[in-house]
Amino acid sequence: MTEKQPIFILPENTERTMGKDAQRNNILAAKLVADAVKTTLGPKGMDKMLVDAIGDITVTNDGVTILDEMQIEHPAAKMMVEIAKTQESEVGDGTTTAVMLAGKLLENAEKLLDMKIHPTVITKGYNLASEKAKQFLKELSVETTPDKEDVLKYIAMTAMTGKGAESVKEKFSEIIVESIKQVQENGNVSLDNIKIIKNKSNGVENTELIKGIVIDKERVSIDMPQKVQSAKIALISDALELKNPEAEAKISVTNPEQLQDFINREEDTLKKIVEKVKSSGANVIFCQKGIDDVVQYYLAKENIYACRRVAKSDIESLARATSGKIISNLNELNERELGRAQIVEEIKQGEESMTYVSGCENPKALTILIHGGSEHIIDEMERALKDGLGDVASVIKNKRIVAGAGAIEIELSKMLRQFANTLSGREQLAVQEFASALEFVPSTLAENAGLDPIDVLTGLKSRHDNGEKYAGINILKNKIENSLEEGIIEPMKIKMQAISSATEVAVMILRIDDVLASKSGGSPTGTGMGYPGMD
Ligand code: ADP
Ligand code: MG
Image: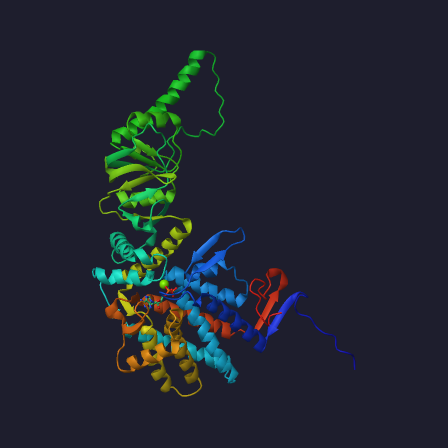
């Protein structure tokens, strides 16, 4: 008999974790991610201060921002971060809920694994529970219509409760609802049409909605008017310069007159540009490219306000706001193509001068100008505002809302338990664990507010058993109440998405029983967070 040679199928530096170890490590990593954001959930959730490598500070309560800034390295943990990002891009809110739910699903799965239940049974049960939960969710949701403004305002306020914008949430919710209603077209809202501009000057309460676009550009020359009333706006994508100024050309002149003649002709061409603008009736120009000095001079003489090198996205927003058309060839410019606004004005606020295009009639793009005393505050305001915008847009689209403050989770959990009882076999246990994972939302809401989570859970459950489908724990009053009546309401879409993506990632992680990590491609042990049991 010859001695067996070991056979290597993987490169030498590959780290391999298999079977139970792989599973437990992944679950642990995912749980750590969920724990990291858990304390921020709900109105009384705490903030986190994140300091990046170069010392920049972010103070936030926003799940996706926290996970983004944490620079997580563990592969399973990264998958958790991905669901926060999906949640953010799909619905713009509910990131903490989605991540926490995924973490809890995995934690509960571990209990089942301990009972020697095979992962495929668990994943099958989870998938089944997720499908059922979404069906129940639809049944429990309440229909609304876009013209119910108070509903939309409550949606926005619920989204912003406990964020940095708490003190101004009424005002913000009005701004949010008004802006979404203005830019929506047949129930479709593109949030790109709501531009958010930040200004570090006076207090947050001065945050304003501008029926038009604010761009961070000043007029090209101080000889131009600083303010134009009844603006007729030309939006030009091409340069207002002589063509090909970079191209090298050789001009032979034999006497001074010829040279003068050449210069005159150049000036004539530039003057013609201004004449064309003037004859169209425009008194304001936004140009995506450069404007020649000579053109600037003559425009100023004609009292025309002009900005150059305006971002393409701003030009497009201006077109939607002012109903103007973007012109590439000056010869096409005429009065019909011009955009309209009541006022175009350069305003200096703090250190910066900006151009306000305001008073547009029926603008399809507009601007929210956030004021605030410091950058950290303004940034957190912006995140709160975006949560509100995302939620209201979602309700305009889907027209379905659910009761917040844990009400929907408790009712779903109750219905899933009843459903579990109709099942035979081990999947039943998985469905039950899924149901119990949902309760983690209200219990965390309570815990974060310093309430006893068990008391709150039992209280909520007994109210739901008595048929109070919408009973939730109002954290602002520390009382169990009808969330719908209290205006603690959320878009159904948030919960739908959170359940889908949490289940997906939990199932994906549970199915892994072998981790092969090549050392060069980043360490699987997650140097950043130091996961126990991974080295
Ligand atoms: P997420 O990132 O998941 O959106 P949030 O920190 O925004 O996390 O918290 C959302 C949760 O807070 C939702 O479950 C919502 O119902 C709940 N909530 C909002 N307002 C209240 C309130 N007044 N009382 C109790 N819960 C509330
Ligand atoms: Mg939220």
